[in-house]
Image (cartoon, rainbow, N blue to C red; front, side):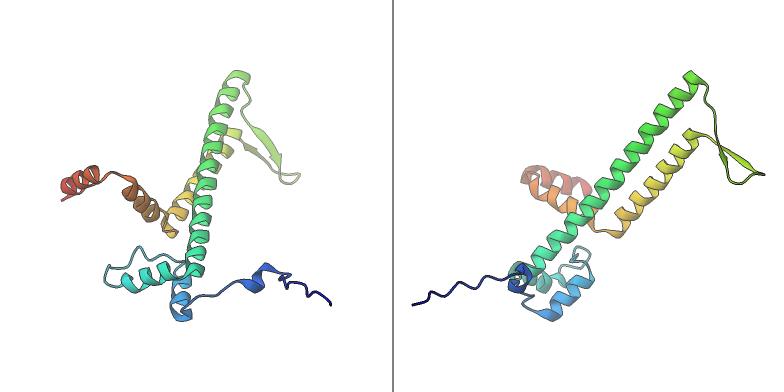
Length: 163
């Protein structure tokens, strides 16, 4: 007698289960699984779907992970350019290195300060950070996590002061 081999999928994606309600899942994926901006009356069905559907929960977790990584990389970029600007400023003061000459063609030479390049990188990184903060639901997501972890008496005190 021949024993039959167990059928293991070659690709893990062949065994994934889709969304339990494709219409609601498509709506949520269009919103990047962010329902924080909806009114409480509108979000009850979406909250129920998120609690029932493991596929959409996993996709939401992936989307929030990407948001956190984008914000982290932007923050590290700001810190790196800020540190570079400070170090270059100190080095330029000590060694009297003022400019780096860049020859674009034979007729024109552009003098660029290394500190100016670091400050331009800092400004660009800050703009990217602001864009990421505006376009992702991360501030509301982090606010929800913080509210869940704050003790109830402290949370009540904050809500009383806000009102």
